[in-house]
Image (cartoon, rainbow, N blue to C red; front, side, top):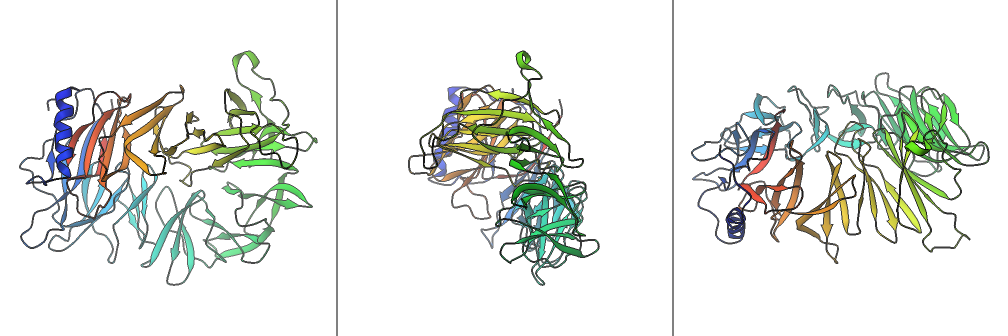
Length: 533
């Protein structure tokens, strides 16, 4: 396969094709518009969702496989002629349900199409990647694993991402269970007082709140069916996470903020009290805390199994081993992977003071209790943090800290990378290689799909052209294995299930130079394999 050079001619060719999308539709779709540039490496087999010509219908969606992404589509026939596809990130496993005259179901994994038999009455519309080898669909839920296993918890089940795992609900009986993140197996459903706020990674345990005021935390064992109200909590937004020994939760005990470990048999063991700010690691091993037992706040790491508290020390070479200074202002923190992003705002002179105050920021490696300072963070009147709801093992998740009124955003990826984005950027996902991609908005708050922003740990902020027109939106963004390019799926803003001329797959340089190269038009990338080396 010959590559395409990054030349002005290529840009004109792509521009002509994309511009033509808003006018007359090409006579035949899908089409390969250009070859993959020679310097792009690591893209393997792919499955494309494509329109299928039929004398009787104009809405058919088929599946077409290529041995390597970028292969020509001329004279190729669809592998499936009528299918309902659960679209999502093409790197995760997903399904396609056979329809009409072609009832063959399919499992899509790593750019390959495999034969499978799906249960009856399944919806295949959208899939959410939970781990590298597990996806779930939503309504009439299926759990799909990379080895080809599909699990339907119940005929009328819905699946939702919860803190630490996946919850499924049996709508027929208003009962709840969970999904094992390794095997995809579904636990039995049991009665709960409300929709669970968290699930254990093995699918056995659920956490929910009672409906009384103030609510109590309920921990349930789906294997035994046992559930018990435990500690009283404040409000419905309860910080907590499943650990190896129970559910670690922040609550009040004897008027003090306390972290306790609670179990389905109603036992509660205090791990730390009193405590200030708390941010739990998604894997349930540790938490970033402000330890206030001595009367002075100290940033520390709490081991959620043993209860051991380790003060955080400065990890920079010239101050290695020096404990961080005491907390004198307000601390906000969030965790992704094994790293916490910690921001301290200087104390306000009075309660009503809203003027921006100096800030200092660290990233803290929880396993070693060492901190790296991040200089030049803006003054702020408040800092808001957000942790991604993705499962603990999802490498694309991103946590954020937003500084107001400045609008600067710091992002934290599961690998510990911290990046900075300007106002008007909305973090979407971690790309890998220390990079995060952000959607950009205009003055009215509307997304500008023609460009996206890439930030990385070096402080770089790069606007990258996507080639999107006014009637297209950014669907998925993937960093190619060579780390120098982005693979971007664009879809019509009025997209139906059938791919049309505005559904394109493009490649662009990560550094923002050159023009986007449209590889496929009239196709949606449903599954993609990555080749090593």
